[in-house]
Length: 140
Ligand SMILES: [Fe+2]
Image 1: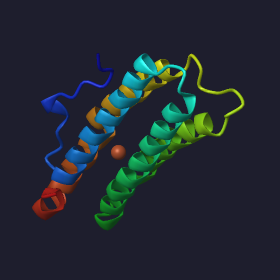
Image 2: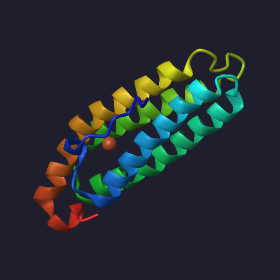
Image 3: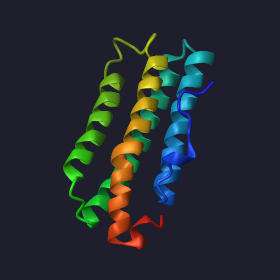
């Protein structure tokens, strides 16, 4: 079973962004699978969640660089949305005393829902703008 189900309608047309989105979906599904097959392996699950955070940060960096380069008018809102997600995941990672017991499956659903919502909203809006500015910007 997967929690992050990729649909073609999530494509932005920017090859690198689309690949990173698919990788993030795959990583969330990988974490979810671990919570089902290795529920006691908190360290392993946390390591995979840390990898997800690193992947998300690298991905957000690319989007933010594109938005800055093309003077995207909604940059602040989009940027804050990215930071909120990173902060949420880092807060989970910084609470080893509380562990992630019982949490991971729910966390993966929250991450999956966030990604779908964000891609369909802010990311599609951003890519429409970039496409208007320059075809080269969305070539990937
Ligand atoms: Fe984004």
